[in-house]
Length: 215
Image 1: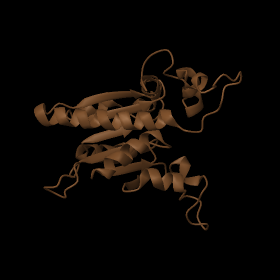
Image 2: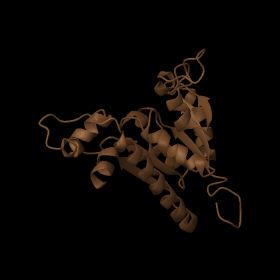
Image 3: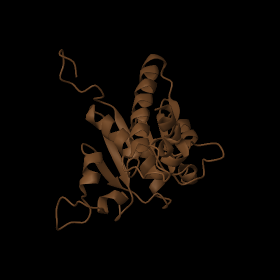
């Protein structure tokens, strides 16, 4: 906000959020914090898997972990089974109203649903589409499943943290996820600035490994 107005910086912006766990939800939480209307798409029944870990805010529930709530406060939600043919109609209706799409599935998953950047930007050319993954959408490592410890090891951070010890240390600070989410947030904002100048959308490919190496 500025001193001249209390309107949030991203007020009026709609974000369609296909993210889960940490890196993607952290990015979209930052967008929501700045006033964007974030619509989180989850699997029916189970939802985002971090809903079900400890600590549960309500002891009588199993789907409201503090981890989940921290990353998804300020968002609206909808449950859609993307594997069902009729789901595509629902999602495309949402895309037509969206300014930004963010996803952090493994590379290729959104394409199998027909919801990849190429497909959705054909429908809506000014769409800003951001994919967050462990190793990027292309290249020899792109198909690897990514999680924090693996990124820490491959990036060299695990070696740096040994401090002279022979055995590598396990880091429980999920720096790669948070950095990727923050880098994605910045890239999305930059793409929106350009779109405001010339109406052009964007495809953003954010790699957790590259973000951690850069740091």
